[in-house]
Image (tube, rainbow, N blue to C red):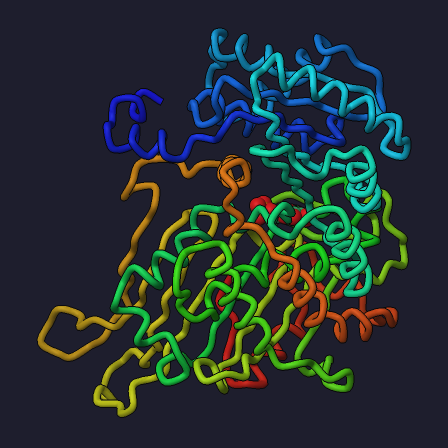
Length: 510
Ligand code: BG6
C-alpha cells in the first residue's frame, strides 16, 4: 500500500483504473464464493482506492439477516480469507457503511421488485449514479431464472447515463445444448456487452502475461509456429482432491470442470494470432478464431486422442488420502473422471501438424500449471561425440506456482573437451518484481466495473469449448471399466503416457 501511494507512476495508473460509483448486488450472498473470494477482493479494491467511496454492496440470499449481521459475517470472511495482515479499522468502517443485505427468494418476482425499490434508496444514499453490477454467485440452475426476473423487474437495462452489467460464474451450461440455452436466456434480457462470464484463470497475472510475452517482444513470435515448434504441452495438475465437493464433481467431472473452460482459455492464448488491438473484441476475436481451427474429434477416434482417469487411494505429498470413490457424495462405482489428457490439432497455417497435448487432473503429485513449448531438434547434429544426448529447447511458462518463464538450452561445459550440459535461463516473478500478484478476482471485478470484458469469456468461446469436448463427453458416457486407474499422488494413468508415447514424445515430469 505505502508503495502505491508513494510511487507517482503507480498513482497515475490508479487514477486511470479506478472504478466509477456503483452498486454491486451479489445473489447467493450467504455462499462460499461470496465469503472466500468476492467480498475479500472487493474489500481490497476499496482499501486500495480502486473502488471509490460511492459504492454499495448488496447481498441477496434466502436467509434472513440484518445489515449488521451481514456486515459482521463479511468482516469475519475478510479476516479469514483475505490476504491482508491487518484490517485497517478506518477502511473497514467505511467499507461496512456500504454493505447491505436484502433477503430474497430467487424464484419470487416480488423479491426483485423489493430489490429494485431498495436499490433506488441505496443508490441515492450512496451516490452510485444508478450503475449496477449483478453478480450471480448462486447454483447454476438459477442463472437463467435470475436474468429473466431482473428483466421483468426492469433492472436489466440501465437508466440513461448509467450502466448495468451481470457476471456469471462457471459452469456455463453442462453441455453444448444447455450452454446455448443459457446464453439465449441471458441474451433475451441482456445485451452481450452487458454479460461478463468469469473464468478466474484469465485473471491470473501469468495468464495475462502470455499476451505481453508473445506480443510485446519481437524475438519469440517468429519462432511461434510449425516451422520451429515440435509440440506444445499444457499441464494443469492439482494435488488436492475434490475437497468435499464430491456431489458437484459427480455431476461435472474433470473435462467440464477444468478443460472446457480454464485449459481451453490458456490454450487459445498460446494458439491465437496477434490481435489488431487490445480491445476486448480484438483479443477475443483472435482467441475464438484459433479455437475454431481445432480439428473436430470423430466419435470413432476419441480413444486415440483422449484418455480419462480416476484416482484410487494413495499418498499425496506424504499424506495418505482416500480414492475418489471413497469421497463423501461420490458413487462407490462412479465413472466420473478426475483426470483427462487430450491431443488437439489446429488446422491452420501456423499450427498445421503441431500437436497440443493437454492434461489436467486431481490428486497428482503436486500443484503445477505450466505451458511447455518444445522446439524442434537442430536440423543437423554437429555434436555427435558428446556424453550427453542432445535435448530439444523448451520454453516453459509457469502459470502457478513459482510463476515465471524458463528457457532450456545447451551450453558447453567448461573444460578441454566439448561436452554439453542443459541449462535454464530463468525469469521469476517473485525475485524480479518483488511483489505478490493480485488475486484473480480483484483484477476481474475491477475490469468489469470499468467495462472491460477482455478477460471474460465471450458467448461464442464458451459454446466452442463445449463443441470441442462433446464427442469426448459422449464417448465417456459409457462406464469406465478400469477405474480407478491411477493411484493418488502419481502423475495419472498409464494410458496418458501411451497417448503421447505413441507419437515418440513424453510428458514432462509433474
Ligand atoms: C475451479 C474448479 O474452477 O478451479 C476447481 O472448479 C479447481 O475444481 C480450481 O480446483 C482450480 O483453480 P486454481 O486457481 O487453484 O488453479
